[in-house]
Length: 251
Ligand code: ARG
Image 1: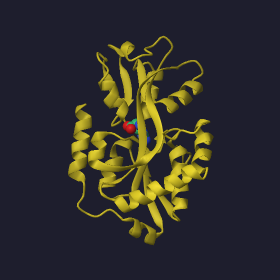
Image 2: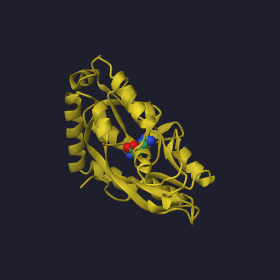
Image 3: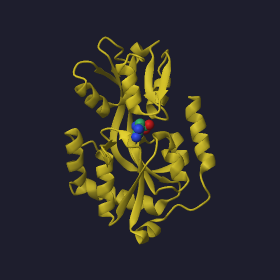
């Protein structure tokens, strides 16, 4: 909990006084700079040296719709919103849940998908919030999983990892009793582990959105318009079905 608060107050402090690039600046340059983590399958990941995933394909489609080329930047998850406030890139798409704390630091687009945080464990492990009592739980640092697991009454030690995949590895190795992560990621991981892991209850729901620097309303308006178009013309549905076998937009 302390770590979360520290990171967010740091964010506020680091909000640079320099101006973020407006839509007019970006349009004129012809290239938009987008940041993600690149370590959060199936949303954003590296395949060899190729950045891919649902959010990468979606953002590339949005940029195309806006008539722009894309320059991708990858950063550890915990640094993404800080770099945004330092004007290192124009927007972030990295599965950020819209939370009141984050809304103090950045502006969010309309949600680009809806999901939730779910428990994954080894067979026989804790499957419910109540069963997490006294248990060791692994989560990625700086996430809503951390925030929500900390709220579970009586939860044992909560261990944070730089990457979500590190928390999954800790569960596989038996260093934690459960991992809490995205419900879609959990489904994929459980499937890939063929019986070595099982998915438990959903702990919370969240709306996931792209982030722009606070006050960059011209860019935000264009992003929201591009997303609405993609949701209307079939582009969004096509990419979503490719990754999830279903349409993951918020309803
Ligand atoms: N949805 C969670 C959150 O809002 C996790 C996001 C993690 N994203 C990532 N690229 N690792 O905090």
